[in-house]
Length: 495
Image 1 (cartoon, rainbow, N blue to C red):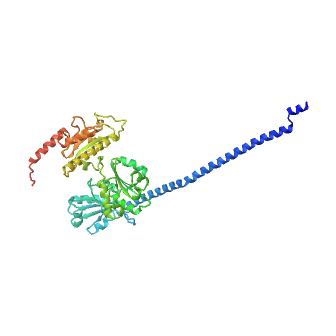
Image 2: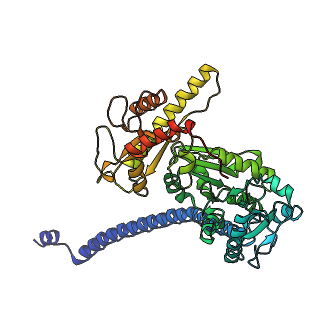
Image 3: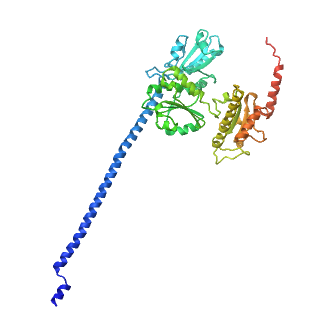
């Protein structure tokens, strides 16, 4: 019986041994798990450290590139400021400020080339016996005081300084010109007062260019009919080249806005090869047309002939396909014998708030302008094809433009009889004949439709449409009567 009791109830020693063996197994498994966990953490740390180490050079390089761009932009702005303070000289050498005494300098055939070579001038060409010149002289003298330290002011006695007068083609007195050698001079045509001269020269006293980053370029090309850009690699283009370009940019201040950009991303935006830096770009028609120049003029920008060549290229390519008419170009565009398709729009109106005033006329500027550009391209292509087929060299008689009625509502109402509630509208103008056409060959108002608009233009050229006078009905009758009677007018000499 004892034997049975011993078999059924194990001894305490045996039980303790079993418990120790079981505990030892659990401890081993925990140690293995802990070791595996530590190894995983170590591997994760190594991976993370490697990623950070790999990313560190990229981050440092990006920071260095950003800092270099900031320095390049600061340097370009300094060039622009120094260009103005040195009298707009393209030279990097120190120069005295223009007009230091606020007085007029009398220029001679001998002194004129030397004094005007390094800085721009406002020059009054006069004759001692001219009464209008005597009346204007005090105005010019007073104006000279207002631009002390900013702009040189001079006078040329054309009776004595014959060669200078001949060089500038002076035919009447007084004549005022803005002179910036070696670029073309600009005639003053405003009111002959201190205020008028101030307004005229205000344009020429602005910085020659604005420095921009690549991120600013899309909005610039979108809002301008045409704009010019000097795109350069700041690591390879010197400040001397930038100063030389500043002279070119200064001569264009009355023509179009000019920008410079040392931002490497600008090459990407304009699809340029950075290895061919620098480049000059003209962007037109909201960026739909981009022209790039890599010519020889950029290899020797300090040369006056290179500066003239570069300026000529920019001027030749600045004309937008569909320019906006403003105070600067309205007279030029509307004072010749062209036929001009003019879109009258309200640039302040949004597509969600405006409504169509006639069948087929769309009122959103964002829609109307592309249609007008399509019409202009289509017409130019047809004209080029017809001219090539006829083997004749003929000037294209048709231009396309648009007018912001928000700024010139009184003008469009007086000339075309268009009121704000009629917008948007399109008319075909014949400035020389003082006529306009607002109805097409189908008897309906001209529409923002390419084919219907071109049919109207063609009909005007062929004399198939009846125009309206810009002077109104009765004014038009008077103009016709006056033209008819002019050949019969006998002028009686005055005693």
